[in-house]
Amino acid sequence: MNYRHAFHAGNPADVMKHAVLARVLAYLAKKDTPYRVLDTHAGTGLYDLDGANAQRTLEADAGIETVLNAPLPEQAAALLAPYLDTVRALRAAEGRRLYPGSPALALALSRPQDRFLFCELNKEERAKLEKRVGHDPRAKILAQDGWQALAAHLPPRERRGLVLVDPPFEEQGEFHRLVEGLKSAYTRFATGIIMLWYPIKDLRAVDAFRREVAQLQLPKTLRVEIDFSEVRSLDILSGSGLIIVNPPFTLADEVRTLLTAITPLMARDGKGRVRVSWLTAAG
Image (cartoon, rainbow, N blue to C red; front, top):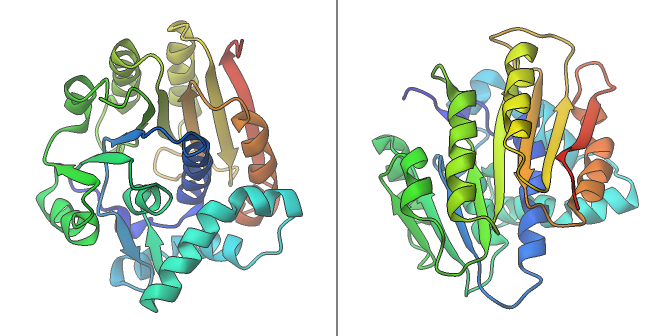
């Protein structure tokens, strides 16, 4: 794979994904019992927004930089605090404009008893991930295909936790692989929280994917989407989506509140659109 997330770290899609991820992790931490996170496409774990790759695109300027510097409504600010405070603390500690990928964010928001499996096939990316989070005894980094990991490492010994599937979408058929991955994960870990990220570019592909997920008829399947551009092109990211199976019971209202506050800040037209709905019944 040639994908390098460093070009896109901290962009509006990342902000949306990681803000929701932080809410899920906050829910899991409410119980003292340990949980496990399986991250199937982990990347390098940490990104320098002043580095050459991020500076080439400047995508973070419309994402995390805008949200960090904006006055937010009180309720949205409280919901975003675990995520945004992690970013601020990381920058204060390192003295650089860093951005945490999902591995670094998950570790920062966890407890000593929690455990993590981070999958990364790309050798160069995995070496960076090892350097950045591999020292943490709670984390295990695997040179394994993330899709295969869904069968190999579920259910977790802890019997509670999160499966995060966030593929690079640089190959044909990724939407179908997401559906198959969801079936595999749910078959083995029906009580776990399963979170799938997808880009919004081609509306027909997204609509077909959403229908395939709905046809699985898995209980408690939530769809969360934002648009930060009206443009619909196969090579232009105009929105970001999540499918979440077994979401925390408060999550739908929480993400509607926080995304309604931050999506207009990140939108190219200053408006932005938020969609939160159940693909299958919440009850």
